[in-house]
Length: 289
Image 1 (cartoon, rainbow, N blue to C red):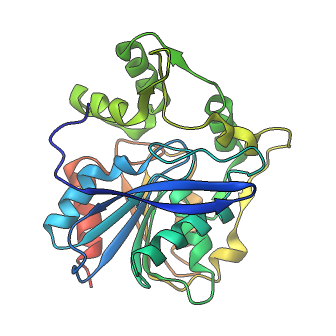
Image 2: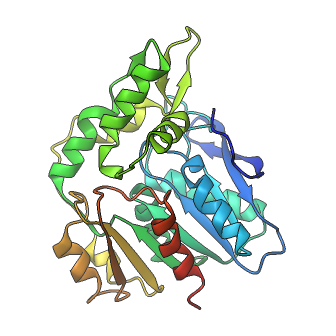
Image 3: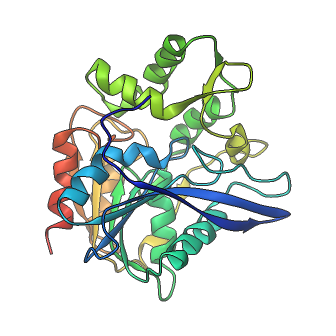
């Protein structure tokens, strides 16, 4: 599996959901004595290991990084039958993690869903986020993008070989803009696991698609929440993104926290934050104050 990854501590916290409890697993990089901790939160179908390369660079620069697998993804447990995959649940779980680590102040890097979670926290009184980086997400998510996501997330993909699964990962995450065979294999190894029958499957609970079912999909419009955010904010936008339009991104620079905007070339939704140039953007941000 994934190799050449510097050491990190794999931890978990016991969290509650309707009808039961679950473990949320997270990676802890760097020293607990670091002057600043950065929480990195992934997108809808992804997991915290997506940030391995970014976390390695950040810890080398002297920061501590926590990267959770949001419940239902990666190494974390799945929710019980009476609970829903929704942002209030994710906020409760992350709050439990921060409390377990004794953290009351963090920087936040959120890709897609991770950015929506960050925005939701940043409007709450007494929230812990000092600075907010939103990776290809904003207060408007077009229904067309939601429909595209909903069309594939709930399918229980199964593959007889890793190479067949790798081809699927290339198609599903083509907008990430990865360039090399090494990078695609790296992403695939983070994305897949083998089930009891030895088949290769995606490392998330297909129930996360329930939010896209049995309802008429409309644009998500969170402008009223955006106006309440005062946390210093940087927005990264994939130049070809269909989820964060240029119009929305530019409006984010004039309203709410008056975000700084950087457009990332050669990718759509969402920049993977795995290559040197994109990691450099995050390093510049954390070191800017």
